[in-house]
Length: 359
Image 1 (cartoon, helix red, strand yellow):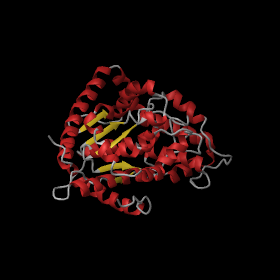
Image 2 (spheres, one colour):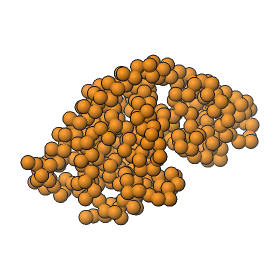
Image 3 (cartoon, helix red, strand yellow):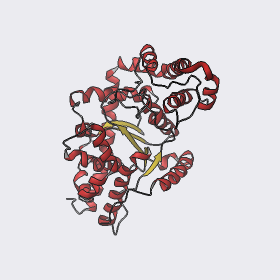
Image 4 (cartoon, one colour):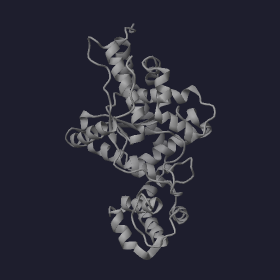
């Protein structure tokens, strides 16, 4: 079994991502996107600008889109299992309010409800080594950020379960950031090893999925020092009210210099707030900084509050409507689960045939 390599892939992934971006405009049906989130709470503006907008764009282009709610994976490093069901439904509300339109080609489902897909876990585990899972830099980072002293086996096998999620539906494009490339490389390796081992004389069962790299830089939290995160308490949630948003932004960290300039390296906190305004308005961070100038941090925060509340206003209105219609949310989940299970059953049968287990 050839050793899995994690280094030297970013440039190649970036070049491939650019080609996919060009081709998806011409051939959207050629691709199937798999993306999703863990149901650990409601989504924040980092999710909205970093991934949700792109999911909406791809789905509206006509790309078949599978949005997976990774409920099993909450068990790897969280004790919030009591809230998984409620959080799952809130994620669906966030998705639809942000512009996702569920359909035959756009599914939203929790992976715990797709048993046929989860049956792929055992054969997939035989295609990677313990050493490869232990070396995964993304897993190491997640263990460190969660502050885990005792690491359960589910955490180490998390990338394999992610491979299950991507490959059961034969997803061939996965929107990710640079930090998620090691996870995707394990998926690509599992697909390649399965095809090499079990499909020597037949057509490959699985595609080797490619990364669609995010163009949005990481959004820092309001503390200005770390990536925006629910667990770090430095986030602005999509569902926050206008007043809550204003209060949170008022507390955002800036620096002691009055004149506002855009310099991500020397003034990361100020640059982060300028970038969020830019994402809302389309104006460059440099132009925004030039306009604010000696208006200082107060004017910067005021501009951000107005821009963000204006951007989120229609989403919040839609959220309020959806929260009054939970029967619809349940219908979306039920219909998506049914369709996803049909896809998973077909793939599982192909796997059985390839491994000479069909009866």
